[in-house]
Image (cartoon, rainbow, N blue to C red; front, side, top):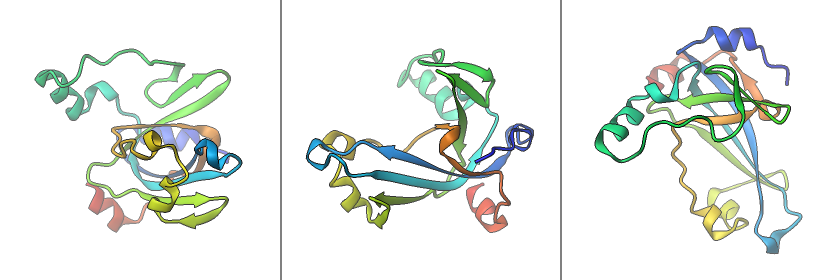
Length: 157
């Protein structure tokens, strides 16, 4: 998909709609099975991770350490785009209280989460599902900055 970076960058701190897919590695006994998740929702763009209230609170309470530099890649356009090994990634933050719609696919067929997790290793199936931010490879973006349903936006705020 061709991403309109001008629209994305102009959304500094604002809410945008986005949809992206991620591929998951199946457990060895399911080698050759294609596992994919499609995530759609409302996200904030152009904010600094270190400025998130949850991060500040975690540092203040000792639950987490100070924010470190990126563990891989470098900022090409802070705080929007990371470049790593000739690939570009967007940083998206789920809107507080927003429900992300996740579709689980096994070999291209939609299945429920429990069935999907049955194809993963036990540790991958137990991975946390709450994220403060997503770093999404640009090649995996399905839609970005399309019109947002105003009711969905109000629910996200």
